[in-house]
Image 1 (cartoon, rainbow, N blue to C red):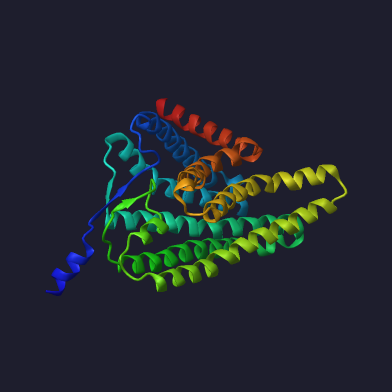
Image 2: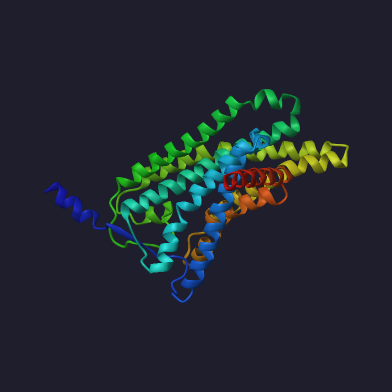
Length: 320
């Protein structure tokens, strides 16, 4: 009898993702647009991972973190875009409750990991520019692995707690999620359970695991900019800024769009604008990262040239 009551209360077994626009006439264009973005994102990030692994010249802390960022961005975009592409291609907007929770888990974990990863990368640049004499002794291989292990473990554990609590809720009434993926706020609105304690726990976890890496990132760049401003040599300033400009651009893209999204009032008028800004940090940022880090990076260009020469040599030997 308890099972029957629980089933009646739950009611919802799947959600409907309303997507970006209700009109179906844009779907073919959006499908091709996001398909190209997905392919370029995956190709670019995997290329960076291969270069960092294969080229000995890139076996440094900065490129170790960059390889982790590319791996993260590959997981990030793969947690959202495949479902979005399937929806645009088939018109089927349904997603099961378990599938929705799984999508949010992987997406939320990637966001949490990225905050720690960006903080680690900013700290790496801070040591390289502000304390170059101590850089090699502090940023050793063991410490780099500890930073990355901490980032991945913290992000996965925190979102495991959030999703576990969310899975205890009963969903009833409307099953329409006014978004193109399963985000926490729209999901929480569909529950018919008391979510007061849940909101408090999420706020506490967000404060503990998001604010410290954010403050570390900001404070690192305050010291970096101050240190660059004190440099006497123009060439020295340009060289120092070039080593951190790419990362600073990524930080501004990531945090800038997230801050705008969570500061926008949740009103029907601004909800469409919220979706558009969400595209920036969920889809366009993973695309921008490999482009930002490779277009002006001579070391990556040289590494790509060496890997291509090596690959050409190996292919030539096999043909002979």
